[in-house]
Length: 453
Image (cartoon, helix red, strand yellow):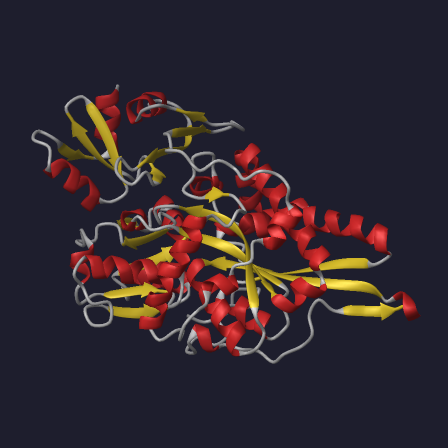
């Protein structure tokens, strides 16, 4: 996978992500002086991934709301300094790490596996970084998905033996792929041909037939499924291992500009409040900024979305991060990572006095009608399907009956079991469920709607 310019143009397609390192320049720069009064202008550079939509509270949504700039303006009125924010958008976390270790980015957001690479590279280059907050998480791992082309004969991970699978090496999606293959009895290094590609290239490879499957992170699987360009093969939540994205900061910046970091974390909490209180408006805003369909953004970031947003560094997430280290070591991407030294909860505890949000509960079916600024939730899939029949539906969402991963109702695989209807993200999940219940059968969405009515 190659890093991308702001216009989405591949720069170094053939170089491994973890080896990319631009020349160093100063960041968090002070420009202009007033004698003994000190610097008059401070520029803070934030690296984010606009289309990795479970980082929006530290990136796309935060930028559009202007909360960080508001916090800095308040600080400037007190200390006489002008603060400026420079936002830099990337397709993946690897170039953000490269820029951070070169001193060009102060604060960045990325997924759990890239965060570990961030920690390792920072230590190696004597430019240490710290994990200071979480953006979005899923305690079962549902943010990553393996997909295939519509109509593909592939039905399960076991069918990938000898096939070409596109992913981004060193990403959370790659970690899901490796673990999932191992659980399925396949050797990720020998039994598949792994294509190391950026997400957009992987999507094109899947569509063009040069890849048999694609393992990617939010929001690529949902987008491809929504557009009818892919079918889910493996739900990352089957691993039942937490996955998340978080905020990392250069340690030197965190010490020198502790107040500015506090402002960022307060602004992130405000953006998180906005997303949780106004999920439809937040989805529409992110869709406008990124060009992604709002229906896809809501699949992940909605009231019952796959991602739960909470800045807190939950113990379950840190424990999962430690379990990720051996995967990266086995792939020779890191030698070791001291997770305890990397994780720093102090800035968030200092900056944000509000209590942590409650843990995410079980997702409920949800219906979004065209022209509506709110959605309706239901207690059962049958109720959702009844409400959807004949309605002007923008999107209908239903949780997987086993993993709880939310999916588009019309893209899900359904099982009729007596008088009950159950939805699944993947054919394999539906077939496993139906196979253990006499009389249960796999059906499509249209038949499920008919039975519900």
